[in-house]
Image (tube, rainbow, N blue to C red):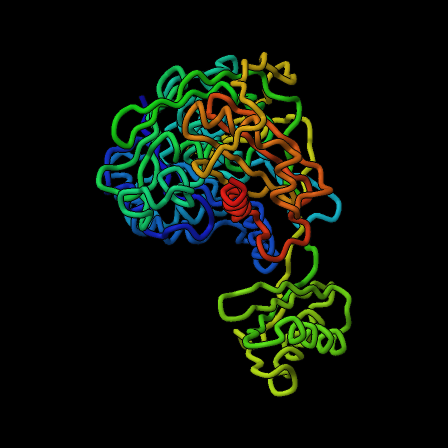
Length: 527
């Protein structure tokens, strides 16, 4: 087998995780995922200021402390921290290694940039064979731009086992392992519905490790003595995160999530098996980021009597001061009163900037009794609009440590893959699933997904029959009138909902991170 760990789930994750993972136990490969859709926008803005940037600079600071340790312990590093400039990060790493007196062999993968009218950045989600090519050529570190998150795990497995394009089930199994690892501590008890049951209460979960085998099956675990837990529940929670239909499209394989089987394999060990794969589609997903405009926000604290009237006064005063266009308000009740979020979006950075925030501060002595704001005035910040497109599968480049550029061809005879649906567990529609269901939610551009799972076959029979699309929209009224897709994952005892367009303009939960917990609460309230 090959032991692959993860030390980063996003740009800004726990800085010390690389050190913790290198010191905590045996590994063959350590990966780091830095590229959310928002990150690509941030890196695009960096590159506008300085064309030599466009990569995750945090990774360089982490390697200052860890590159030598990884070399001493024979741990290879694979990361997408290259962002929009993998060649630039590879060069910076080479300079760092030279300064540290290390002979580190660095390869990188490029070719994901796509021309798209009006875009700040547009990048295709590449697959894993470029990573594998660099590792096979002897790279100690492989840097990529925009590849699928799971490719960081699939690539090392391809190189280790010698898989080719025809090993679809193995590729699919490794893709599942990669999807479980990609968000770091979310697989070990982070953001977990049943966090109060964790040994440490979820205080400091460790980062996950996948022991991947030659057939693509794996065991998910973590280093001994680290926090959190690895259970069927924690792994299920990550599996239903930011997915849509059971046929999970990827550049190298279509992974059928309804074939995944999870079984306990000892303390903090979960075996992942039975995953089936079919040929990948003829196209690649492209993430397109544009500058949507500028935004700003100020929050008023409302207490005492007449909360609604106080909020209405602030609204009127701000609309008089800066105009109604792009101005939005969200009133959130608290135990002692309420918070009024005043938010503005505009194409003019001056109107959305100090003109708006200063107007809010000027109300301090001229508005409702007890007027208080939580922050001083601030400037506007640009915000992005993320959409997706497709391009035909196309070759890209793996740059080996010796500088050789190797073309990675697209998969042959690409076509849409499908498998027969498994027989679902049936349940009576009148059964309520009770309080013992977990949920995990997330975003993909303007869409949101909510995966809901049960902890027993009996509970799943009730969940499947009770939680229809109609009841889902009743429990979450903000989803009413939107296109809601419902998918069943019987092997995981889960139901997944995808809500199209929910996050367009959402102020309170713009990445749908809390949507699953709100649904759980309303399921419990309806019992």
